Length: 314
Ligand SMILES: O=P(O)(O)OC[C@H]1O[C@H](O[C@H]2O[C@H](CO)[C@@H](O)[C@H](O)[C@H]2O)[C@H](O)[C@@H](O)[C@@H]1O
Image (cartoon, protein in one colour):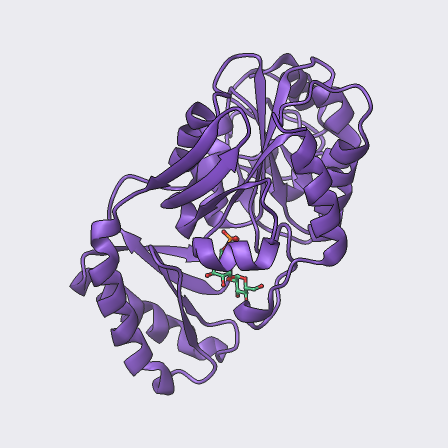
């Protein structure tokens, strides 16, 4: 871990080093033992705000590479997954940030869908939870990597099975993310969720797929050892950004982002998007409140004066 991140942790009111280092239990306003140094998992609300600490993190001068989740991070959560558009102000600042720092979007969305939402050519896209990577960086060239595409027929079959049962679960919808399939229950009655989970679990078993959980969504994906964390490791190498002089920063809100947070322990800085009333446990180092604070964080990168630029086309 970079010294900056370690200092951050030790000075944090939460009192624990995020990467298993020292420090004593501290004064988290929530007063919970989850904030103690002995625990790796901490309440998100115990974490310092990234907007207050980012300058300190960057002081050591490592070259920054940014990994950004989409839903709930760049784009606010909305009821209809097809209408989770990127706010125009965020697109503008993201374009600017990506012209200065190597930037990748790591999302559960299909690659096609995320490209249609973000509409920027100077970022790398890791769709389907990192199973489907595509992008082009000046000085590096094409970055393209698809994992477990042989599972596509099983995913299509699972999607068909789930669609057939949609009428039974009012409000539910199915989303094809190419190398994962989402079953959304945000608009379903609360008492249906148990039945939905058993149903989706059955479909997962039938087609030999893995089941993961997100924000009011169950997701089926190939049963292989790959996730957003593996995608980040792959990308760091492919981007030629895997040296000790590099500081990877990952911002995300969902459970699937924890895989990436874990990979960055001892190596980078992870920022969870979680509101002040959140009960979420996380291995992240820092927190921001919501996508508008993510935009403020990006704005900080866009406006920063003295920085080692890492986007090779800048
Ligand atoms: O990795 P992410 O970019 O965070 O994608 C994870 C899932 O996000 C989307 O679902 C979530 O956002 C929707 C729109 O705000 C919301 O309606 C839904 O309840 C959330 O779970 C997306 O639709 C999924 O396919 C992604 O896997």
